[in-house]
Length: 626
Image 1 (cartoon, rainbow, N blue to C red):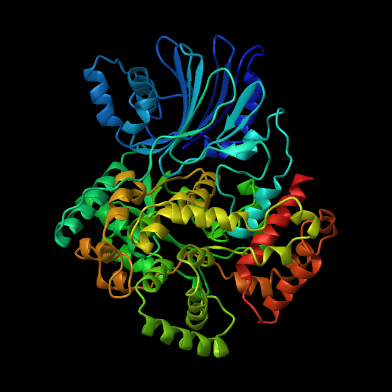
Image 2: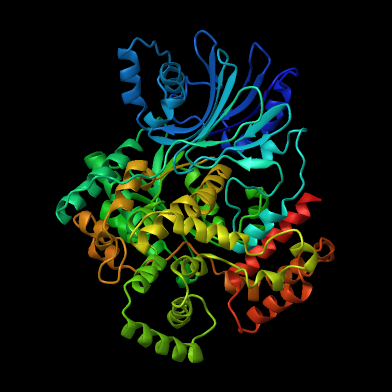
């Protein structure tokens, strides 16, 4: 992995190479091995670069230019089919001087122009300057594994791999976008292309931005299509297996030490089993797992069982964080507000793994591709529910509400929540599974002054409109595709990229291969959910590779003991943070609303762990803007 930053001027002025280098130095963690810089001969484009050497360490220095100097690229990511493309380009007469994937981008662009993106298999974000056309192309991979931020100004576009580098530019304003704050309080993250700052944008996944003589709009170049699948279930399972096998094999190419992060769940276990099979008698696969001492949040036993079965060289990490310091680290690391508390253990396991390897494979994307989330099963159950069953659930939910503990992990509490959503349209029902605060909550949370500048129900409308936009018969398919468009790139992949890059570790996930994702999304719902469990086809396709216990193990996210922290080690910090006078002076939140959330949680009248954590992150973030 790498990091880059730079600018492209529309005319008149000259790009600032020193400024680009200074911006790129903010990305040293993304590229600790080398630095580089580029200023075009016409003075229009300047790029600073930091490199993490993974493929062709001795060559492939960046930014990389073509032999005639007409094309220059700064590239963050991996192109997994680069060897195939090299052979094709060489056969067409291209002379390649390096052994890596970066040079492939230059030759492919020279021959196919912007259509090159359809040929790439991988994760990437890059800036490519075309001196012939006087044009800059910014591009991002199909699913959004690698980030790219930019700001379109009157006379130039400024771009960078992370916001911390972009904001180092003297050209940008740091004015907070209140609509983004509203979206964050609703979802726990800020959906692209919006960011926390007005005028700053994230290039969405599967988009390219072509800039010549003035401001331009990003264009989509790919959407998940419908894969052609066999009619027979056994053949579909074989298709799934072969596509995942290919994706794993592609991601094993590296000139540096490589391992895997394993949780003991189905997805990462399949990845490890396939890695071990590829390694064969040579062995040597390194695996890493992390967990808290609290058994409710400890993934180590399941991961250890998989490691023993696959014969890997296994390392365990016991997470003993200092919650106060962890809060500050997350706020600093993620640049804009990011409310996913599992970012903390993700960062810690990446930091441990980096002591041993430079690249690690993961199981990210398996849930979205093959229907693994409990909320998919819930929406499927609601979709197929008969009137009699509906009545039965309503009665059961009413009774459960009388005795269910105020703990979101409780089965009874989840039943109550499910039943409460049954009377809603499916889009709003799915929204309730995903949101932190709903449109009915925000008017009680925000001050009248703040509400005058925003629409409290805008994020919910955006969510539901997107859910209903697709022409899909099954509600599970709508939910999956919604997650692929939003939750996956704007939450999970942001979490993975920033946490891993903070440790200078490259993560790769076979389930994020775009053809694997298309196969998974295109499967009939019976291949996704069967006998009340998700990922049915993965259980069938890989049953010979793993012990039955892996497929029986209940799904558990990479969670932290957040509720306990808020009632213990973080209790004082929570009060100091949310009752801070500086926060009140911003005129965003009603003090009594914040106090009510804290009191309800501390006294067990409600489980607001995720809401409170997200608000604490936001408040700490605001303090850093001053």
